[in-house]
Image (cartoon, rainbow, N blue to C red; front, side, top):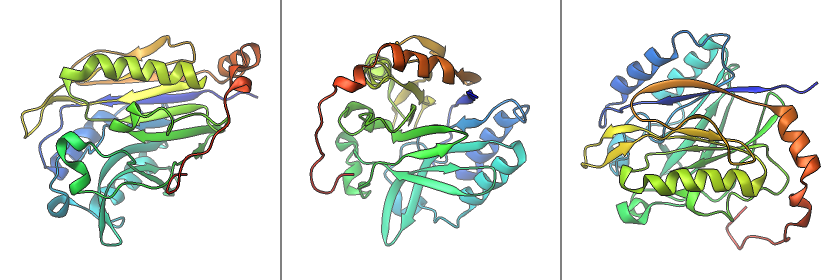
Length: 262
């Protein structure tokens, strides 16, 4: 039997470098979601905003935010995902965590570090593409700038939905929406993108435009500014039917990524 996936987008104005404040703010948005969603998606660096103070703000995998995510996932009976600054093995990562209700955790480290903000000087790049199995769905998580690199996110017949978390500035909002839609169409999958709103401590402004697109590039929800919580249903049968009727993936070129890639 096909099982649909209920995905909740949480678009919020994040407090600058204030983990406790942001955890409290986001927890307030979770109210009422118990039994109504399978997955909550938060923005990139949801505890701090897009800051380069990795050394000063990093947490460990046994830190407060990880414990908070586990508690909230268990309380609401759904998975929660978003990225934060994590210190691991002497390095700092912009790490997306995917926390399931049973407390188990998958993670993906941002591969493409944003050169314009000198992110590569403060964080280590991830080396491995990640796939997550959840409720019969195969999810491929990515972080912000990864959206611009279609080879990295290419569907090899191994996922059903891309999930992007971001702090994507308003001045490049046209690219955000266009690329989210393109990734869905070219990969015959759903594309979920959650961005933030407001202004950060560096003066960058964010328009939000969090959205979900289906395999045809059609909008299923989101696409507006301001704080909002919206749940969108990913239809399993519709995806499987489209892939059978339009099997473009069977004509895709075969290739391998270079050394250091996965």
